[in-house]
Image (cartoon, rainbow, N blue to C red; front, top):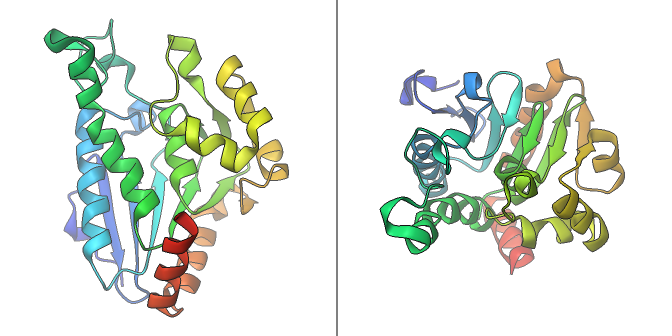
Length: 235
């Protein structure tokens, strides 16, 4: 039985717990901005990740996006030249304040990567920049056949600040990681699958059901053994 009432529908992250099968789904909920990572969304996502990590009744986690994209990266409106305020803009504190602002990004990425419970990315549509990093931090990646991937940082004069420089080579190999970081080209879903970074590619209408089937399978297993397996794999 789903417990969607725990988080209001207007929240930037919808937390939906399936208490019958022991897994939770976290849905990035800014479809009008392609689920780009604003300060509000980052704070909500960090809190949701911490919440599911501490809940022993939850044995697996799915992260997905609402609308037609998984996550289009950092919100450009909160970067230099944009009108909004957020962690991606230096502000009066200069570069040091910008560095400190990335503690929230670290909390999200490391929260996923170091969480003892398996995390599944259900990738609907594009995963760009920080959104690509977010997907790469997960343990299992299931993509729709419309998914695309881009390390877009070079297009705005940056390098992957959400863990991509560490994650990409381990998932894709050093040569492909370098190509994506240096060119900012898209990687299509078929190539991502061939490189072994995706567990499955499915029709868009089947994406969530396939991810939920995987989450149920994991949640039905021995929780201590699975948590220790992830911990040792990460270390």
